[in-house]
Length: 158
Image (cartoon, rainbow, N blue to C red; front, side, top):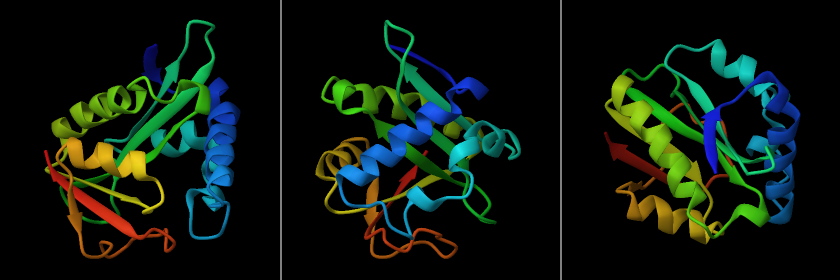
């Protein structure tokens, strides 16, 4: 798998990957990334922010099969957020999420002190990965969180 920065041509594909994934867990509801206004234009969204990027994983057929982003978290100095880590079902179970997170966290270390992320309990594989990678679970969301359906929050010192 090749991991590269997202390009304009990837916008629609990654939007579909995110939406299908959320639908599969019945999370296609307000308060999740499903309704993020920037979801159809992620390239532009990440380019508008300083110290923000979104990467995609591409298979041998040059198909986008997943992605992850890093962006500043609200107005908090030194804190970024790991965002929109989604993988197609066909590409799951081969360590791709871990590889995407490594790229994202390596970038984050250059610009931030802490990395925050939000998820839900039912995404058990994701929660296991976050714990393995040194994220510490928080008791509540950070002030400024926009996804009110999330019920698990993590922070990692970079």
